[in-house]
Length: 99
Image (cartoon, rainbow, N blue to C red; front, side, top):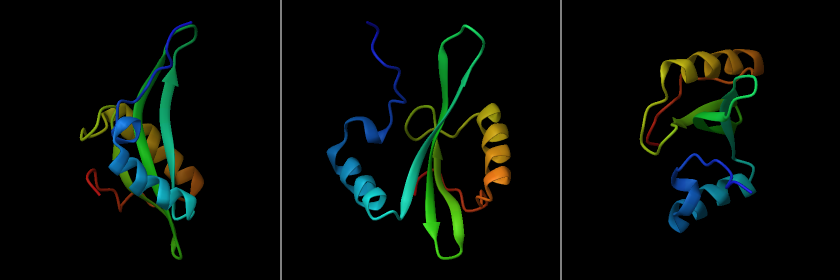
């Protein structure tokens, strides 16, 4: 059986980072989303990992990286991320790659 595809980001194997993000997710302060695409019959391609903060003022993107750590998402990822944010009412203007 092939190994699952991974984003290779800080959530993968850094206990310090995992603890920070896990505490925010458990408190429901933020949630994490993986933006992927798949052509018919092709492999899954990871475009970016997104952290959405759930604030009193609404949902906002705090981080979007990818598909590797500390990299800015490519043009295709931004296109789909913008469409998703518009559809879901998520504020993308608060984005920071290194929050």
